[in-house]
Length: 119
Length: 108
Image (cartoon, rainbow over all chains, first blue to last red; front, side):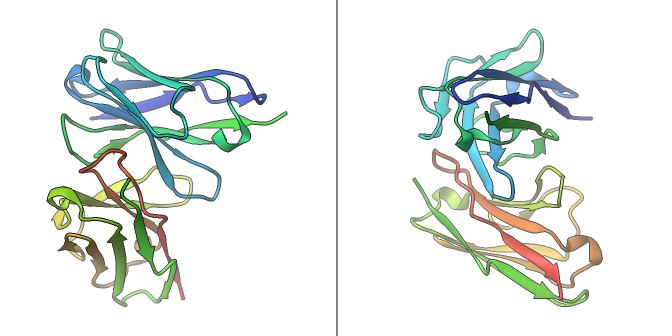
């Protein structure tokens, strides 16, 4: 059974940093592209970032480019999102989602982890 | 960036009725790489439809998708109580992979 479990969400002050993790199991992690998607309270889904199978290629939404870094550790079956210079607009539930190589939808999602940016 | 506009924002219907949800793209969606997701309160999204019209394994056949190019439709033939939720379309053919703003299907 495919499982994605996010962790690391917390209350952080504006300007602060946080690292999210997403543990994967039930599939061959190093053969899938992985994504982060966020959802602000009461709002819609927004794609954040994507990483390819070996971590050599990444893409970001304009809103997080230069502040967030996606990475992965295939030996640990874990996806990461390093978030720096956080603002209130980054407050959201962050989901990791499994894609595949190339253009594919997100068949599997984690349960999400809440990041709150507030003083 | 491809902008997806969903309509209506809210659909108020009764169980057993037919629901028709629309998703319009600001430019043609590559190879009709258009997906529909269902999200219930407090839960992660669930993939219903991909490739505009292919149902994911385990999704009931009352859910169907259609369309091509810039105009897509999700139809729920007869609403069951568990179908009342928010539905999002997503294009995954171009980067960034954008979502529509969602359509809420609520009980009338």
